[in-house]
Image 1 (cartoon, rainbow, N blue to C red):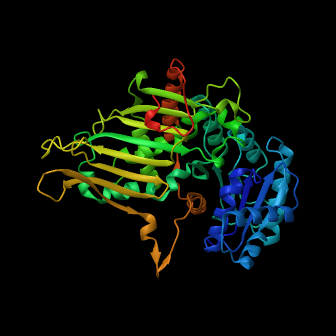
Image 2 (image 1 turned 180 degrees about the horizontal axis):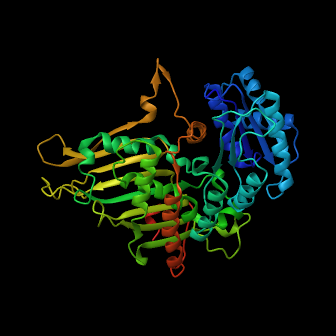
Image 3 (image 1 turned 90 degrees about the vertical axis):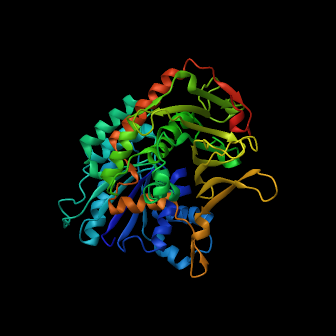
Length: 477
């Protein structure tokens, strides 16, 4: 981690930088996870001086973080410079290239370079072309002392395209401009602690892995519920969201990756290649049960949101039931459900085991001795397992209890509470290390888009349901 690093952020004045990237970089810096020769180059259309960009970054960090070492923050901000540029203007990338070369010359040798596309997907193609056209994929300029292990990498935010045709076009372009080892396609949900622990939990606990099949599991439910809070309005990203919708926004990436992790085979070796291969093999076997297992809806008032077309049919809620056509999972429904403006926020995976074939008291409760294993991704990351036991007393009434743990309960060191690292901290850190385990590859993305494209074609025939803000997801039918 001591190799010199230059971090170039395209879209450095946008929401992603302000809400996630600036704080993630600060946390990595304050923990000593970044090189001593580290710097950030912000690139955006807004006119700014280096000092103004530093102040801009300072305010975003102070707004999100408490109890900051001010001296350390000032040392951090000294690493920041800014270039005004247009992502669709080749000259802007030539200017960027000269700036990077001059800085490398000042240091005395070339730095590793990490390009982060914190920009709308509509600008990916032009950005890719201009990065390559300006020679920025080569870490060392001819006039600067080279390093044998120097690298250039590109981080791409989701969604990667709008359908399978565009995804193939973008992927073909990436493959022509960059080596696969240089490309890091982000799904930051893969970096959340519970998601990372899914594989450990499954393959390290034989009591569950031995039951992980269609003989013992009745169905699996994956939910991504977002609450209607002021921060959840579409005021800042309405036009972008209206061209995407809930299925493309979180279904095509986050939720299908959740499905892949819960359903994949044992990768045998815990490395990026094996894990990505195991995930892609599951995703290639996923299909929609039938068109009757689809539901799409839109919350009342969506058409009044800023930048939304008044005749938009974009879904803010969807429910689909999928199947996996392989030996382990054939016949097990996988339900995916996501929506905005619901009554609560929750992202989780629920595994419903088949009910006991010999329940002691069939009529003592409605749920029939069904065990449920729940992985809570957000909020309050953790795992819960519901089991049944006899209530104390003279009768044989069965009642449910839970075995559970929250990550917050175990993050205690020297009697001082610690916090979970944000997913973006892990994304950036792994990219610097060159570890692609928590990133998606081409096969995964194409399998996801094939399924989503098929769903979109089918549900054009299905009426769009309207629901009230604050609705309970189960009541939307």
